[in-house]
Image (cartoon, rainbow, N blue to C red):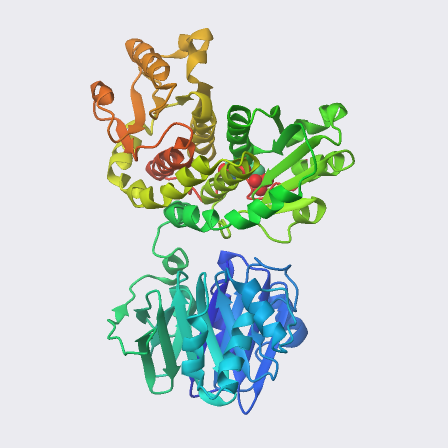
Length: 590
Ligand code: M6R
């Protein structure tokens, strides 16, 4: 995930700036850059880790008491030196670092290009220094030119900007991407996150959306978009540096779960890109998903969606099994590879086999990863780097991409509308922490769990069970709700809790009856149901209520309860959920 630092100091700034940006390394990034201002703008940048780039071009060896820096996690354009931030205007008088995505950059790029601006990168960010240049050329100062620029931007941004025409300040702005300021006797700071500057100051001011900030040696001034001053409270941060990296959460996994409501919104905003990719597909009459682990479960939901909505024959194959199925591939099959890391060896091998005969699409989180270079088409999930080994937020973003893909393949406006209505429901999702902690305490000594669901929510059961196994070391088994009576019911007794996924919809009654059968055999049943479900009250206090959505959309929200359940059981068992034993975040061996 991208990170920003800016410092106004009474000494050479580069050493502090680079030490500060290094504090954001844990978030994952692929390139780094710094710009300082003296009588000119001085820039050094490169792709790779900070230490690698530093050893080649000595990032700290750059004059100036005022500067900005950035670590980039590629979104638009590959991780190259040209695409690394900072980006400058034509005259190299303005330098900008940016977190977020400018959605209207193509229109702005065209406008500026027509006016004679020359661009050097493939990024959305580069339109920003050029727009500021345009307004400064018209006579505006840096602050007003930034104001004029941000009023033209659609999308998300946290910005830090310097100019050699006004070498005494940094201007910043925020919309839907975090930006904070720090103040101390030794200097004043801007950053995307607290950990970056916590070793310099614990006096922090949080900016809100649509605010602009000026940082200079006298302090900071925060304004609204009309440049009216805004009074801000200074917060004293009491976290230690390790807690700060996790944004105050105890583990990355829980931090990443708490990011999920925002991820739903961010990934939905990728809609137009998915629409464009769908237009480029050749004719196909069969779809084959290929993936591993959590990505496999997301793919299974894709299968249910495509079969039920579009009626195209679809199958899902585990990547490690793919080579045994390759004979039926042909040029009328679309093969979709789903992978968070884009580096999973089994999935890469399957892609190499599939692309010889079929058109391929990759749904990937990490820009520039191996799979993105091999596939014919790529859809990026916009989850940001995931540090916890257990996939959580990336699963949600994979699902959103798959639902959007199906909606566009099917030209299904109703499904699109339903997806967009989810954004309004997300605030409810993370309100059950205490209740889930109580359930986790009660069942943390269990040796086995069953998770059951039907249709779209059978994969949810599989994913809930995988989360449990991975981070609690308890055996969990996901089953189709109707299948228990064909064998596994023999195992059920009062030592095995059963988690039932029971959203409203056509399969409700059958799953409800299956849960009653299980309860009649002595098992404790934990039910995930809808807020307005009154039928489930006889399952007593082990009920987790969710927003009222139909079973076809439930996988997007109900899984959050199951991620939290696994997380809190791991805490009860004193296991570090971020680093489960025997597992790696990216599995690069077959
Ligand atoms: O990076 P990928 O999505 O290709 O990884 C696939 C699996 O290794 C991964 O989903 C794994 O199952 C997760 N750790 C589960 O939480």
